Amino acid sequence: MPELPEVETVVRSLRPALLGRRILNAEFGQLRVLRGLPADTADLLAGQKILTIDRYGKFIAIRLERGYLVVHLGMTGKLLVGVERTKWTHAIFTLDDGSMIFDDPRQFGRIEYGAELPGRVLALGPEPLEVSLEEFTRRLKTRHSPIKAVMLNQLVVRGVGNIYADEALFRAGVRPTRVAASLSKERSAKIYQAMREVLAEAIEGRGSSVSNYVDADGCQGSFQHSHRVYQRTGEPCVTCGTPIKKIVVAQRSTHYCPKCQK
DNA sequence: GTTGTTACCTGTACGC
DNA sequence: TGCGTACAGGTAACAA
Image (cartoon, rainbow, N blue to C red):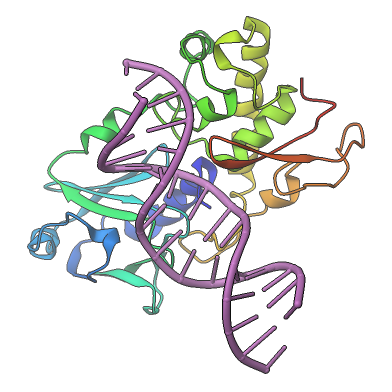
């Protein structure tokens, strides 16, 4: 499932294929991923040049000459360049050189278009790789939920999902159920450091390919081989050998070492 | 404003 | 082999 490192990898692989290209034609299906997309969207897009492609947390913002095409990959969404449509294709963009499709079997993804970036994208928390330690700590201090739930809250920091929350908390030695506001300055700093470390390493590894994630060129990531707790239930902790435990926090499966994480 | 719960959706894994 | 069921989880909407 695409989180910050996977979306970053997709954005990086989209840029060479899309920047400077012009959209000649757009075709949309009728599925829920296009909910709220005005009927004349295809007409509005036609003729527009792709100026920039940026990432806001897990959102992809494709800036055109007169607006923004904003894509969220959800759980199984994919933006692919230069491939034929499949039975899960919900949008096809024909370019002056090449093409791009949006595929999404589970239909948790979204595509929208507007003159400006949507307000809820602008309202997201800061990027975890850009936020300062002071700001991060301040944001945790006001939250009275389990730290895992707080890390998943995109208004606190944007882009962290289930995999990297578990991995960061393992590296920080903090139990996912700890209430964020009760964490000491030192422990918050450890989480901050671990979160940035694991995200940077995952970007380096071009993301984690669990479920069906691939980048815009159809390539898999490699960071799934570096997971220390995520989906390793019952396997020995890489540090102490204690079996990794799985619980539910914030309605999400949560993996941790009961000995290393206090 | 914050927190918790539920719906959405379908491919995959598993048990029988 | 085929069927039924549980599970996976990001976001939005809603309730408390």
